[in-house]
Amino acid sequence: MPRAAGLDDALQDLSETSRRRLVVVDWAMAVVAYSIHESEADRRRLSLLLAHSGGWSAPSFTAQEHTIVEIPQIGRCLLIMLTDHRRPVGYLLTVVDDASVADDELSALLRGAAEIGVLLSLRLLYEEHDRSRVRELLLRVTGTDPVQRRAAAEALIAERHVGSATHYASVAVGGDPRPGHSPDGSQMAVWRTLDFVARSSTASVVGSTFDDGTGVLIFPRPVVPGRLERILADPDSGDVRAGIGPVVNRLEDVHHSLVRARRALRANWLAPADHGRATAWDEMGIDGILALLPVEELTGEDLPRSVRQLLAANLSPEIMLTLRAYLDCGGDAQRTALALNIHRSTLYYRLGRVRSALDGDLIDGRLRTELHVGLRLHDMTGVARE
Image (cartoon, rainbow, N blue to C red; front, side):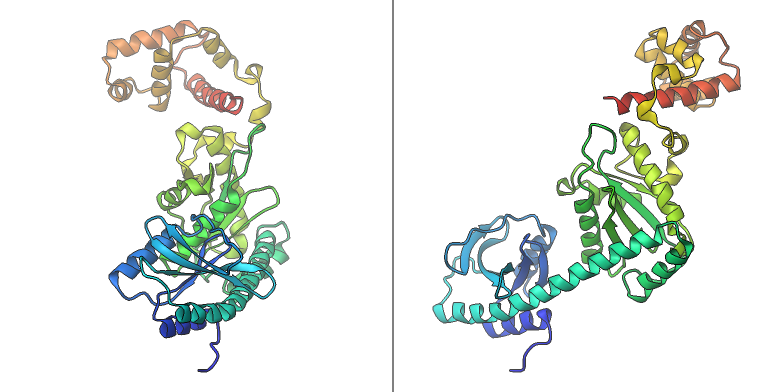
């Protein structure tokens, strides 16, 4: 039999000769390659392995190169350690159920695993090289030098890291960036997103983690917030959020999108109760502008006088909620009463309590704007100091 050209071919050849469905996983139990799975039961098991890729616990080995373990929802599995003749690089997995593995069959799998291990090591080396190259190009395409941005954009497309398109959008992913919090989790979130795209489509998305800990993803299309939110909701992704930048027409202009994606990410963490896990810049409104301020450094004395008066009055949460609804409705009493499902007289009573705490009148549009923005800033300041 001629020598297989690569990992996928070698794995399929071994599957044919052993008459077993085979899966290759790396050292972190993430699925790297698999043979053809024909039967319905085989496809069900494969889909479970793919769905939990990287989520299984690594097996314990004794002096032998193989072991049999029970994997939840998959069944009894034979795992053979894969090496590149120097170090372990992953495992060859096949489901054995309750059947025993004959000595000659095991010997054949072990012989095949020797070649699979070398090929897996080569693939992992290429993937590591690609990750380093992608990170380098992403740093350049989102940097400050327009010449480097243009060259990096051309390289990303020419090297097929990302597709040529008429629309590009960026995503900034990260943990809580506020002082006293740990901003971990972006690397796993980037990996989960890239893995989801690779497993569920033929679309191209590129991503990496920057020096400040922020994960950056570039999509050659508008980003669907709901889909990204579902990916980030996976517990394995960690406690992370995402800001989605606006669409730009050229890859070399994606730095404009990333600036706003980063700002949306910061605003998302400053007011997490009011935003989803993944929020687009275009949906941020005034929060995106307020995120530019050093909110963590502000005190109550930095707020407008009208807001300080209001807070000093210690009005009830019910009255403050009514005021916020009134401001959200642009001072429209009828809309506010409908939104709160209260009678007009109740609304006017509560607003009267607000007026008694202020020097001005709520009919003044500038005062309403001051209160609206000032209270929002107070919310962000309070969240930042929890």
